[in-house]
Image (cartoon, rainbow, N blue to C red):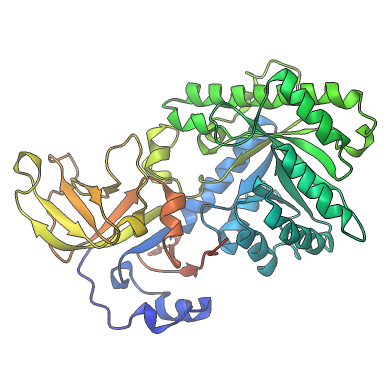
Length: 436
């Protein structure tokens, strides 16, 4: 891409509304953008969403879309409604995300009816979640929460005692699959004791059991990813079986949702969901399957390493400008250069593919990174790649982790490869939700 000279600066607009950004940028070529800039291809994004709907259908499960990667109204709609299927169930990571789907009209118009707050419930979030439940209930919607510690149950009980009209909270029990990330271990004695207290609570209605297959990011084959997904179902199913044993003896058993929902997944595990993968589930299920995932609309180098996707499915890239050049400074006398995309634009996440990002079409990688700039490292010449790089060039970088890359940008430049000329010019602007 050629050198950029831009006369109008984005910071002339303070907290710019979408309308102002659309007026300024839509129709412009990507070479007119100030860097660093994140670009999303809407067509590839939508194809990825439709593919995930198909996976869930083939696997025989409902689908719950995590909104945390892009945090936009526009992206949420594509995740929920495709030309293959639709769902109205989502997960959010922050209260800001939850309230922005309300403000964006997705609750009032029925696009979202089932919203799960994706962290174990904190005491200082209960007021906010209660207000959110009141708002969603106007439209027949429901807020669900995570429980993985009995203090959370006690917080909720104390809170509801003070309310004029106490309510029940619909809860997933978060189970730990061994990653030690979150959740309660499914160890029969302690787990049954935990469930006994939960089932006895007057303010909890257990909706199901939820696991996140974080280990699946280490997959390098379809067979491995399928194995992780199958194991995760086994874990949630074991939790449900133990729960049913306890519930059978609980005086409060009528208060809990039946059948339980067994919610499992991550993007790599969800990529393996299929009719063939369903055949690996040989045990009787003690509930209904739900598949969840979040990174899949954008994708990145971490996902590429799993071998479950190819480069054509990655819908995001960051534009950066080469701002200096250092001949012979690299290893084996190869060159290095500097670009204006650093940790804020790319994140410092790493993966099993070396470096912080691949430079599209070039025999270079983003090898080192500081807050606002990155060091580009020349690689031995590769077939089909250009070894040339010079000050002023605009490069395209695919980074390691799309979720954190997207979080560093104030808005996204949208292109659309499904229309003629749409790959190289801005067709829309999406503004992500910021804050907690």
